[in-house]
Image 1 (tube, rainbow, N blue to C red):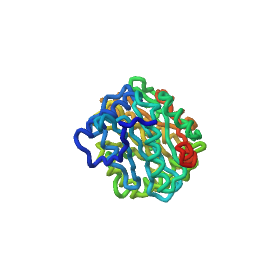
Image 2 (image 1 turned 30 degrees about the vertical axis):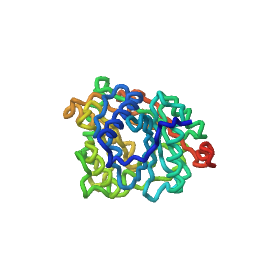
Image 3 (image 1 turned 90 degrees about the horizontal axis):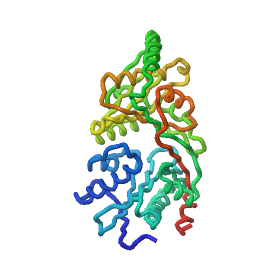
Image 4 (image 1 turned 180 degrees about the vertical axis):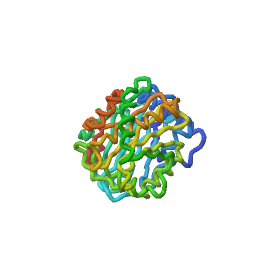
Length: 349
């Protein structure tokens, strides 16, 4: 049973007092320290950025559990409602509770608020990811009747461990293809005249394994990409996009992306890498990966490590990453939970 002094309230990240911002920042850093112990703490604006700035195609509903008469945060939950045509049956959510306050009804109280939003929006399948290093999460999801959907890892490459001879070999082989293919690099937002081409090639990401997740293919649009570009700018996140183009047709054949925040330049995040099926088996993915790593070494020496999230069943991408020197860093499970089971758990079914 949740303690009487814990109050769960809606969170509007655009209307917060300074003490509330500070309390949320302290909570966020406590949770990040548990999940990402190597990483430095975030400042207030970094904490609030992902809550304030989301793409317009997502609605973010947040609830916060306050303690000490509203002086500290002990839990937070959210649910994303997608405003796009695909997957109208689904929403993703997450719940965080500080370790000392777990098993006291806080997660249940936050879940009740999330379930109310899901009911109102007619989302009968809920997705959530758990970190194997924090067993409380998977234990809670199992009690809800969660079904394992897909397993994945955050793999990390320390650039000191990079297989540099392999990178140079991939770059050398790729440069032999310049009569047929050419590389371009975009820094920041996608060029406006390339938005439709990027939307079309991002559809290739639907071929990445989702194992047993009950999801429809997502159709990217130029407007989706513009919304994401605005979000990245608002959050202070920088992106390099490297593309390979077929010379004769001018078609965009493949791409890879890298993200980083100048406030924490030591860590970069590997984004999507995709090659159109008709251009596969020509070494283009290796060429893109090699040239991107070469660019990092030459132009961003402050980056010390790169992280990449890949499904455990995506053997082709894992094979490339392992050869480069990526190693498993964190283990994730994405679960799917029927809303009916959640309501039963809450005593409302």
